[in-house]
Each structure stands twice: as structure tokens, then as C-alpha cells.
Length: 315
Image 1: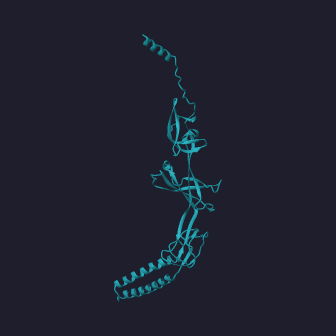
Image 2: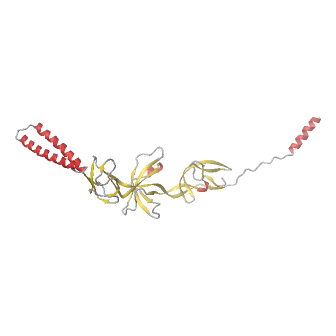
Image 3: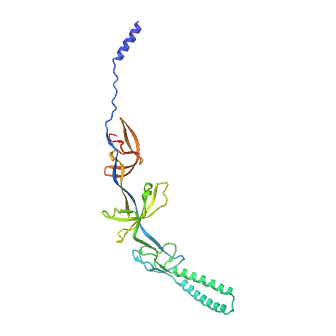
């Protein structure tokens, strides 16, 4: 009976103690994800390049007699830019004249029946070879410009022996072009002739109009992008190859899911971004893919749907 009484007393004492539960509720601010009609505009960066670039050099070794253009000079299509030593050309011309005379003599004898067709064919082959050699030497003695443009580079002086470097480099800079790597999601909407606006940090406040000229037929599997080449008119030649440029494409307006920038958290050490999506009194950590930023909101490419609620303060 004494033992039972002790147990009852202990039970009574323990029943008087109250366990205090800690309140773990966190107050947060939330926002509802909605769709908005926004301009579907994207921006990419790259460097300006010459529309065309030509190397002026002979295909055979030789001494440079004279160079008739210097860096910065304007040149025209068909203009003679370099005169190489013409000793070989003069020798080839003499040989060609002799063969032409020999061919005519052989042809006359063949017509008179004094020579066979085989003899005529033999001299004909020799004449054709001489003509080809002369034309090749002539082309490599007077070097002409295949395009109109500017001399961008000169590597020799008069009297130098040509080795392997280009004698001159000619660039056409009207128009100029810029190559941009565009995300694969825009491939179905990209078309040749699509307008683009080009800006340069070096020329603030100025916008240049361009058009899509080339679209790569394949997508890079590593970067998930494809190459687009945009041509930009450059009549005043303000734009120069090598300048850093930004290219903007406008695909018109479309309804896009938007999320407040305050809701987006960047994972430290990575480019991954996530939000907290509210479900009743709990939240879910969810990774999202974002597009461009418009004011204080981001376009959501994936991860969120219209009508979902996200935490914007108190994360």
C-alpha cells in the first residue's frame, strides 16, 4: 500500500507540469505570379567584323617591286595594289610568242599535207601549257584588289622578298557584320531579314539598324545556342571591326509569366536561381529558369505557372 501511494503521488505531481511548445511560425510577404503582355525582346553581345576580308599576296615566291597602297588607304575593285618583279613574266611572254609562231608554221604545213595531225597536236599542247603559265605569272605579277575597301594591314616594303605573310589585307566595312550566339528557344522564330537594333558602349545614345543575313543550320549541343549573323549599314564608316556591340531583337508582344525580383534567390557558387512557392502554411523550394529582367520583375521561362504564390520577403 505504501508503494502504491508513492506511485500515485508521483503521478499527481507530474500531471501538474505544463510543456510549453515553441511557436515556429514565420510571417512572410507573398505575391501571386501573373501573366503580363510584354515586348518579347532579347539582347546578345559580340564584336563587329568586316563584311569581307581579302589577303593580297602572290601564289609564288618573288621580289616585291612596288606596293601602291598603305594602311588606311581607300582602294577600289580592280585597282593594282602590288607590282611584283616581272622578269619571269617577260621570259614567259617570249616563250609564248615563239610557240604561237611555231604553231602557225606547223598548222600551215599540216594544211599543205606536209605534217601529220600528231605533230600539230603536239605543238598545240605545248602552246596551251605556255598560255596557262603566262596567265598564272601575269596574275601573280600585278596583284589587284577584288573588293572596294580599306587597307587594314601592310607587312612589306618595296624591294622585299615575299615569304609567307600577306603583303596587304583589304577589308570592306560597309556594311559591317556582327555574329551573335542566340538561345535555341528562339530558333523557330528567327528568320532572314529580321530587323535588329545595334548599340555600342563606345557610342552612347546612338542606335544602328541591322538585318539578319545568315542563320546557322545547326544548334551547338554544348551551349544550346545557334549562330546568327547581322549586317549593319555603315555608310559613314563610324563602325569599325573589333568594336564591342549589343544586338537587340524584337519579336513583338506576347503574354509572359512574370515573377517579382524580390522573390528570386541565387544559389551561392552557381548560376542556379530558386524561389519559395507557398502551399498553405508551408513553402516549397523550387528552381526556376529566368529570361530578361523588366523593371522589378523577371520573365519566367520555366519553373512557375500563372496563379502560384511566391514569397517575396522573409525568406
